Each structure stands twice: as structure tokens, then as C-alpha cells.
Length: 152
Image (cartoon, rainbow, N blue to C red):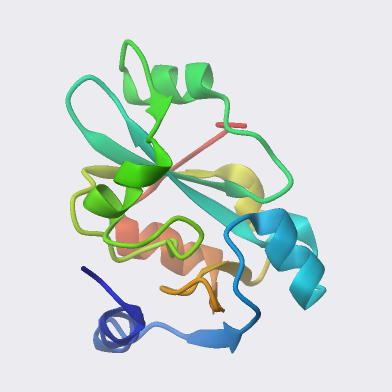
């Protein structure tokens, strides 16, 4: 199981600029935006998805919906489905709503929606449901060797 301490260590070891922001406990991005005042489009959803053979993470803006057909085309898979809530931890190492945009356990690939690059910094799960990680989108790409595509 991963936690916020491991996330901080990971980011510091990689020499990545970041900030952890405390908040009331939330699971959904819309609730996080409402509780913090951060615009929904600046809070990312890190969605664990399953293909026929592997787990991947799709990172999208909080105000968007993942297009699983577009994602399947991008990664050349027959089908992509969003991982059931109960199994997210098994792949990402985090609880739903706490999943950051980097530092995963059993994820083969990361695809980030190109709209996230429009911001200097973005916010994602901070390793707990009571925190958000602020990070630069280009660092998300670098840390994950992420593919940047239109997946919403």
C-alpha cells in the first residue's frame, strides 16, 4: 500500500516541485473543487482502467468525462473499462479519490489528456482523501513517461 509519505519521498527523490494541500475528506473531484474553491478543470481525475491484459491510468481534467473508445484506440486495445471502485487500490496503491497523477504500484501505462497541459500547475489526489497534490503537468508526463492524447 502506498501512502502520502511514499508519494512525498518519490517526488523529492525525482527532484519534482510539488505542494500538498490539506482539505476536507472527499472522493469525487466535484466535491474537492466545492470544498477547496479550486476550479474543477484544474483538479485531475486519475482513473484506473482495465484492458484485456493490463491496468492503465487515464488522467483527465475534473470537468471532463473519459471517452473509453478514444482511449482504446490510443493504446490499441479492443476494450477499456473503468476499474471497479473496490479494485482501484489493488492497481494504483491508493484509495479512490486519493490517487495522485503519479507513483503507482501495478499500472503498466499512463495516458494524460492534452487539456491538462493548458495549466501551469494542476491538482490531483494527494495520497489521502484529505489532501490534494499540486504539480506541474509537464512533470506528470515526465514521471510517468505518459502519452499525451485527446481522451475525453
